[in-house]
Figure 1 (cartoon, rainbow, N blue to C red):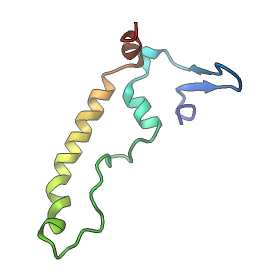
Figure 2 (figure 1 turned 60 degrees about the horizontal axis):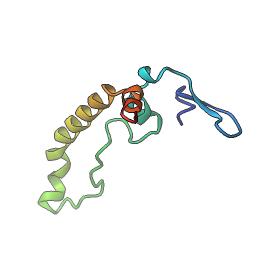
Figure 3 (figure 1 turned 60 degrees about the vertical axis):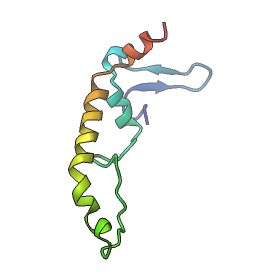
Figure 4 (figure 1 turned 30 degrees about the vertical axis):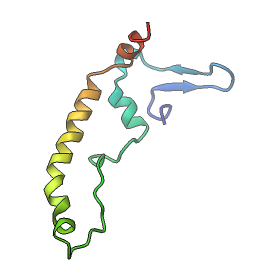
Length: 92
């Protein structure tokens, strides 16, 4: 997945993986999207077969949808602000 996204090159053998971009140019959002952590705009999944006879089940998606979409957007904004280089620096 990371190779397909153009982030790494992988070759057979020990130590056969290397970055294709500078770590300062790779964000956590790039990695998150590369590994398909969630479908676009679907980080939070709501039960798709809710009981329409239940007041909660009937309304839960409508009530939570905007909040969950905003939460995902904020998370993605934060991931976009963090580079691999910043994380590597924390190991030193």
